[in-house]
Amino acid sequence: MHSILLVDDDPELLAAWQFVLVNEGYQVRSAPNGVQALEDLKHHIPDLIITDWMMPLMGGAELCRQLRAHPELARVPILVHSAAVPAAEEVQMWNVRLQKPARMNLFLTTVEQLCKGKAP
Image 1 (cartoon, helix red, strand yellow):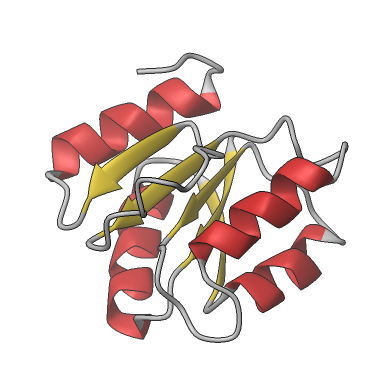
Image 2 (cartoon, helix red, strand yellow):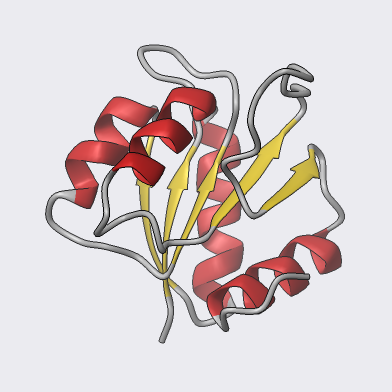
């Protein structure tokens, strides 16, 4: 069973995606921002991190920078799932970006591929 860390400040969206992913057979943990995600990652390294871009305390850009800076976390694939479009000058520190709201089948296929170590 693959494990996923969901990071999003929208509690309803977080609950909905967690429900969907658990029903698909994934072990899912969640965090409402990058600060709490990094705290969770001290105790459990998932197979995939799915993050929003715009969040309080620490958004997706800084979370991605922090993840790529830690050798033990740098290998974990990152799926950015956000309505926000990263600035053109942002260095791509994620594996895949899906525009919110992503179609369910595209989202699940992307998650499956990233968990298996394949880029979609």
